Structure formats: C-alpha cells, structure tokens
Length: 73
Image (tube, rainbow, N blue to C red; front, side):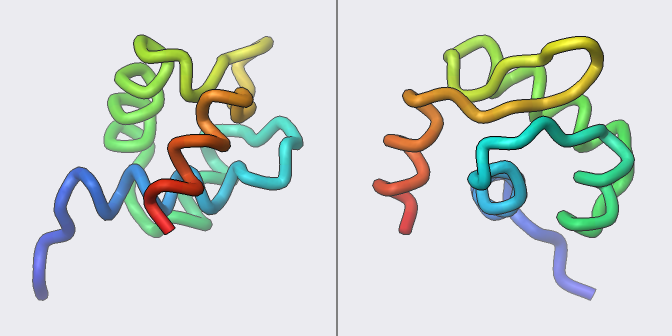
C-alpha cells in the first residue's frame, strides 16, 4: 500500500468540500478515506491559512479555498 502525500490528502479534502455545504469530520473521513485524526490535523492546518472555516464543528470551504482548489486542478 502506497502512502499518500499531504498534498494529495488536502486536495481530496478540497474536492470533498467544494460544494460549499457544511461537512462533518465523519463525512470527510469516509469521502477522503482516511482516519479522523488526519482529517482534523489537515483541516486545522488549512484553517490557519483561511482555506476552510469550522462552524459548529462542521467544515466549510471559503472563497480563498476555492481559489486554491482551482490552482490544484
């Protein structure tokens, strides 16, 4: 089994939240196919740069996050 890079995991998270709705950590865990600790760590890192925001324990993409996703595609 090949270990995915941080960039690949973050891109998968962006793909999962790009619809603009709020997503729970459990939902992202299933969509990205990784454990909740990894999701939590990456989301907290992405939040530092304003790419996502956490509202009531749910994750939502920001406009800046959408710009990043366009560059990743």
